[in-house]
Length: 505
Image (cartoon, rainbow, N blue to C red):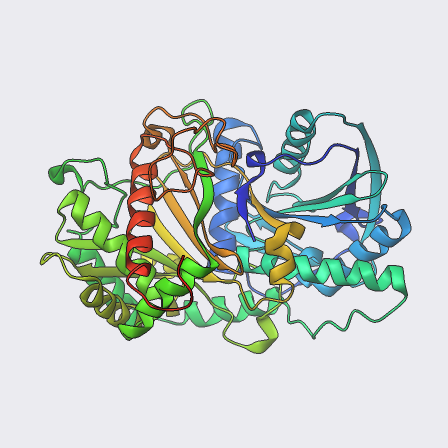
């Protein structure tokens, strides 16, 4: 299942309709809700409010995630309306809103069955470019977190098929939410059309989860084990969180980078690349080597990233931040919400370790650093008086066993993300899917080495002579992120080629 910036791939043209949720009577008809707001959500809201005060603008700080789902049948207006309202009723986070009131917050919630949908016919598009621009702009405007709804649906109808699209502010969803949501929406629509039961499992409310997480986090002090884990990590970087430094001199690699929400006039949109690292057979061979070294695929991916980084920079340690899900109870597995914590990751590579040595160290560090994700990072930052935020983040997730994973990976669905204006952040996502291992990354324009093309087409038109060992889908940019991912891909393939797993060509 691809994870892409919305402008990276075209959408087949057709008739565009937007579906805007509303509640008769507005927020005044909602109930006051005493449940607490998560640290992530509160910081996200206050950052948006600060941006509004500073710039008198709502846009320019987009942070939404979304879905694109393909249906190979004509669009049924009654069925899609029923599908979307049932889905909103299923996930309470779509029927809840948090308002900033002075120094405090007030949550408002509305009951199932109260949210309606307003259908807006935008027009018929014959070219994918203007269609994608229209949808992307509408999602940017509709997902402002200070308003409800901070989400929007859209459909693109054609004679024999249609596309369902959804986008929501990050405070309402995370990537894992959407991996699960594509199957939910598909099954609900099919059940409505066929008059059957979608047979979906019970789902918990993220509003309940965030309230409990906030209550427990606010009760903690500096003696919490997560605080010690992060303090040690910061000491290893001379007090700083790691920044991506594949192109910097050693003396500059520990420079502190402050996290700030930039004005659009000051910070251009980040660049983005997406592609396939290895196919399923090659991924299985790499996994077999990881297993022989008594490590998981996650540890193997991080070990390979660490080895490549050391080979290029000579840095004695490899440091990054890892997202970790907080769905530690079965009731949260299919919930929409922002179930994400972060953990520190640091391993010694000063002796230029072999892969077996690197994966052993990565395995031990994953176990040790897991404690760092047991407390929201924003609470840790309060206790440590830390003013910076994660800048170099690597995420790994295995989606092969999610419901509908094979169909989604074959093209039925994609997870979408907005562009970002972060001036320093480098985010890399590696996803193990039924087709193989996919990579997606976003990074500042200066990290692109002057390559302004987000993605080269898979047919190689803009990338006629890709380097050996690198998929032409990703492109051949000269910037440090491109080089890092090419070097990483080459190493993963070389390691996998040492395995006798399966049939090799």
